[in-house]
Length: 404
Image 1 (cartoon, rainbow, N blue to C red):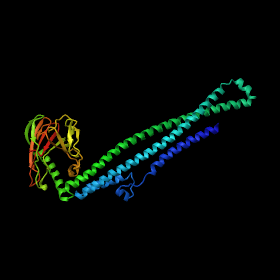
Image 2: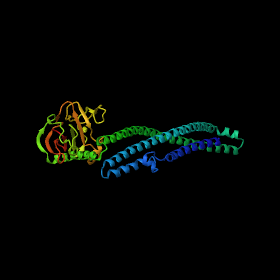
Image 3: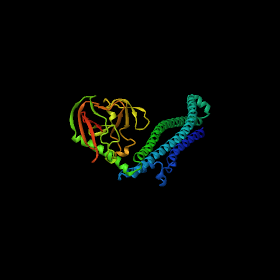
Image 4: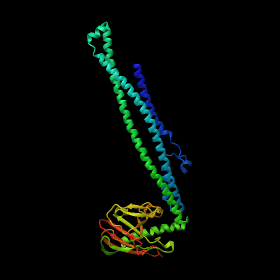
């Protein structure tokens, strides 16, 4: 009997050891070299490749901006996203293997534990029944006092041993129940990684499109690239000047007309222009910081004209009316866009929303406030850019650029 129990105990320990060994091996076996560009050339691992490429991007962003350096940044950003995808897939594979192997071993261990628990339960019952034998009966069946004492001593030892062993087995079962909880956490992690993988894949496609947009807009020409940077910077400078020198017009109510959509700031010479065509650049600042205008505007269906899909999407989560009438087309959103390379002054953030409307050119106040106007040369030798803006109070100001 002791031999059988020892055999089961050894099996339990062996399975537990193998399970632990798998976890350790799994951590070190897959530290292979990345397949991405410079990471591969420098023998950098899948796990370390993203941080290596991010360091390169940070270094390039601190250098003088040229078209060549911008393309290099974009190439490295594409490589970075590919490296994240590679690392993500590696994590998913590692966790999947971990889950499958550990689940099988825990299942095997559970079967062994159930079996030995059954044996021990039978032993305890048998020992208990043996303990119910009356002392006189035991004395008569023992033959002599020496045999009686030996039998009594054996019963005590067997009972204590059996109880301790089944307690240990139950503890082991509890431990591996906890291990199952850990495995369930890993399964949830896999699902999270799969969603992250989808996001990285979409990001990679967008980054490739952004690079193509850069090459299309600049025609791979350094002069055209610098013109685009200058135009974006001139527009930003005009807003800053308007804040300081704007002329007060008076109070306006929500829905009041305040201007007409125009193309002010445009010039036939790209070196002297800060507009690419008739549109409204709508921007909101809160506490003198750029803020996403959709946080203030009401929810509305608009046409996505930035990404060429021309799909109707829903934007807005605030209580302001939109400044243009339906149908509204968004030609450039707030935040990271295919044109983010222009906005070095804001870290690549397009600080407003560019929009046009087929429903008319009238711009209306989205909320009550005090109206101001301002005009200045877009760039020296160029044309005038016209700006109106509304101070809504509570340190919230909305801006309307390129108006007639």
